[in-house]
Length: 594
Image (cartoon, rainbow, N blue to C red):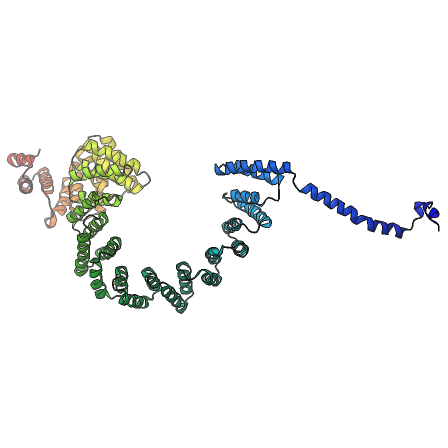
């Protein structure tokens, strides 16, 4: 067929196979052109990149200002313009990771994964990824992030310790030990990895491996006293006290001047029941000025705690008391102006029930700069116990300058004012104590009981009764309140039926308390139940327990029962016990009841 004949062929007669061949050769060129076209479209233009840079700078500005909501909007706009920007994925993940919702953390994990897909050499990306997955409790992914970082980024071997910690969080102690070993091969033996491995071995019951680790650390740092001490303390915690003692004794044979190690050894002797050795060594340690004063004070406090426990169990140990005082005296001789030393002394003498000496030590502690609330509280307690109410008021006011919001200090101030019969000042302080202690129901009830007394002293009886009622609403068996409330009602001759019920309840709960028996008797007297009052009063004064008030009341009851001679005899007994009572003189002289 000639060329001319070919040209004149109708296309519909072209064989299908020929058409197919044509398409096969033509299609690749079309596909390549289309791919190139798409690539050109995906790559951001310079204008889009400049716009993205502007939004990124704005986002950074708001990020620095901690306006994370606005920062996130700008960073997301950057992502629209340049989705292949690894840094903006990281910034979005950083913002989302600050959220508290799991949904935010999940979104953050997607963003940081995108950042790492685009950039594998930035350690901060891996660190954030590990943090996000740790927050999601996905320790496996957190571990993968750090493992990848250590592999991809040079100089990140120190993150092996964090990697080991993640294995511990994931409850894989064997893997953690392997990582610590890997860290030591690169970075050398150190305290962190060695102590962690010791602990892990001990938890797994591998005592020999733990001891080997301790020995390796000590061998690597033979002059580090704290490593020896730390190892000994660890052994002691795992009931290997004898081994701990052996290590410290060996160390002290080579380093006899190490006072802190001797302090620890004395404590180990005590824990091991070798009290004589412990005390002998402790006396020497307390003369050593190289040993920290705080450590010595803690030892005295520890012995004082034992004494306190003994007291609560009615156990007497004079030798321990003498020894503890000896240690404290050594301490105060070396550090006479240390406030903590005097605080410990105050605690010790309180335990020994030497209140006046304890009070002196707390005052010295405060004079030397002690500012703890407990010191002031203990001082005020001792002031009240010693009935030094002027001191109580002054010290409470000084304490309030440091602790103006402490209801307890207002309470002590109110108590001091009440005992000095400054009822208006007492009420003012106690009402403030009540406001500041609103969350402590039992303490508020105690304050209400004293407010009842203080308002009674002011003759504001409605307020007094209200305070008493509030106290009893919390504790219907409050003996202090039942006694005073019923007694004052009897004196006022008001609501005597209620007074009798309260006094009867009081005696039911306290059948042998002579003061409460006197109250009940006095209520019955004012209800003109003289025979019952006599029986109760005779119980109150039985066994030689009667006071001047008891005998005066007994005389009044006998007078009402017509026994004038008996009444005078009891008044005379009262007079012999309280010579200042002028009313008794009139009763005796005139043989009459006033």
